[in-house]
Image (tube, rainbow, N blue to C red; front, side, top):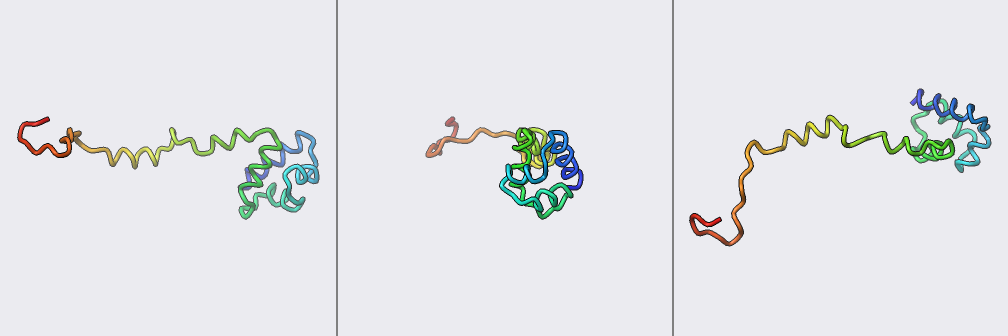
Length: 99
């Protein structure tokens, strides 16, 4: 959180946006912006999303958890894959040899 806050602060300053202007654009107070830039973990995520939007970086939020690269989730799914695949019998067909 500290790094994220520092990165948000640097991005804001590089764009020459004051904390007061940033707060107004985000719909937040200046103290919220200050706490966010200090890395306060109690800041709601919607304020971070709003800050990214103001900075033109909202697309970076979409890449936070790329499910195609979620190694833990994919590993758990792979553990549940059956060892063998069997063809299911059609419902209502109990005759031997029927497909």
